[in-house]
Amino acid sequence: MFKYMILALALLIPVNVGLWAFFMPWFVNRRLGRFQNDLVNRHYDEVETIYRKMRGWRHDYHNHIQVLKAHMELGEYEQARKYLDMLAEDLAAVDTVIKTGNVMVDAILNSKLTLMRDHDIRVDVTAIVPRDVGISGVDLSVLIGNLLDNAMEACMRIGKAEDRFIRIYIDIIKKQLYISVINSMEGNVRKSGAQYLSSKQGLHGFGILRIDSIVSRYNGYINRQNEQGVFATEVTLPLEE
Image (cartoon, rainbow, N blue to C red; front, side, top):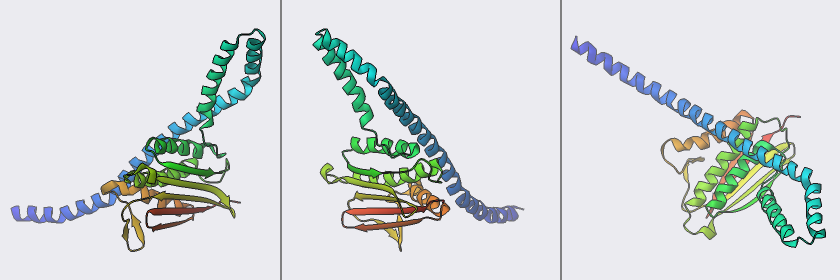
């Protein structure tokens, strides 16, 4: 009896290990997807709030002018100066926002740009994205978010802050959405044949898998290249007519 139990366990263990190896990536990818979707929605709400503030600025512009004129006519120059300082602070908060034309892309871009500046990474951004490109806003945000996360992680491994940079270019070229992310890096990249691997160990490589999965889903193309101190990723996604 004991012999049969040992035999049964010996047969079941490989099956369980196989099932775990099969379902674990799916489970982690799903959890990661939910987390990123929640994050994108939160950033979307933040950018929508800023947009409403911008619309409020335009709406209240005439009123601001009238208030300032009243202070000046009454000789209340100090009050006018304080009022201008208050308006300048509000405008500075709004003016730092990247506006591509697509709110979901704006949400993820502005969120990541804030993190990059916090880590002393020089950033150069040119981005134009129509409101409706025929690509899910969440997919687009997750794709761009993971590309920028990878670039940021590579930069943060560089000791000297002055050597950290990321260049982002997004535009419509020949009926395709073109995304280019170029970043500085240090050391060597990990590759398996022609396939680039995450520099992190364990489950962190799912960022690359999600990028590749989204590009594949939209019949797109991805090109990764590296040379001394620089890594570049290009993505093209065909747009619906």
